[in-house]
Amino acid sequence: MFENPFMNASGVHCMTTTELEELAQSKAGTFITKSCTRNKRSGNPEPRYYDVALGSINSMGLPNLGFNYYLDYAINYEQRQPAKPPIFFSIAGMNTTENLEMLAMIESSNFKGITELNLSCPNVPGKPQLAYDFDATFSLLKQVFKQFTKPLGIKLPPYFDLVHFDQMAEILNQFPLVYVNSINSIGNGLYVDPQKESVVIKPKEGFGGLGGEYIKPTALANVRAFYTRLKPDIKLIGTGGIRNGQDAFEHLLCGATMVQIGTELHKEGPSIFDRLTKELTEIMAEKGYQTIEDFRGKLKTL
Image 1 (spheres, one colour):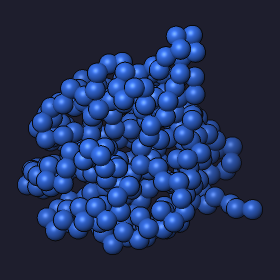
Image 2 (tube, helix red, strand yellow; image 1 turned 45 degrees about the vertical axis):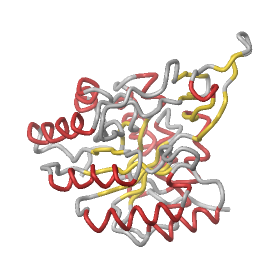
Image 3 (cartoon, helix red, strand yellow; image 1 turned 30 degrees about the vertical axis):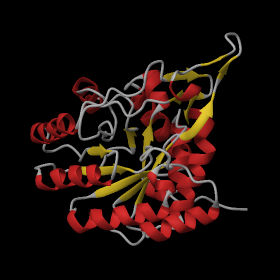
Image 4 (cartoon, one colour; image 1 turned 90 degrees about the horizontal axis):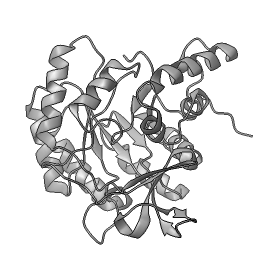
């Protein structure tokens, strides 16, 4: 279905239609829109994103141009490019009602691509991200699939305990999801500028989500954990710490079908997809693999 496994991570190079068009013209296998809310949001005060040596830290606050802006673009794109692979449309409502409202509008629209429900954004103040509340996640998905019949995947935060992988997989296996995207940034890291003796981002007194090289081992663990627990028809999108073809190879080896690029895309721009495709192809040739399916999920243990 897709020419290669690479795509952007939602939130990176996908805020405006100009950025989305640049992704569409790049060598990415496909792309995803900015996680959107029903109405436009300006997000947190700046600076809210900061590149560091081993990755990035951010507390964006879900800035986006609103649901209609992205849905109009997605439908227009499909009409202009009917032969292209499906694109992904990401939503992140501030509560259950908003998520269900947006899904109902996607259901009744002409959008033919794949929808992503982002469960790893902060939800109700004083409560954890929705995907850290297992009962609430089950309740939401139950309501979602009473009304939504188009292809749907979800984006998850990282988990750090084997029992949580077990519990979440047990929930997800009850629903007709087409994929799980793992992981979002590792929440509430803190980066210090020792010269200024200061934090580097303004929101939340400097606390923010970590991305990039820092998080690859956690991302690989989450991809692997869900690959070995989810039913086979739920695919994995691996996100986290992919800077080169080797990193992508490792995500695929752990079981991912597609991989998303965030921090490194922000640093390098859409030309990164040329480089990553070339590097992955070279690795596969060196190892004698003709297709990704020759090695996908076949990670060895000791």
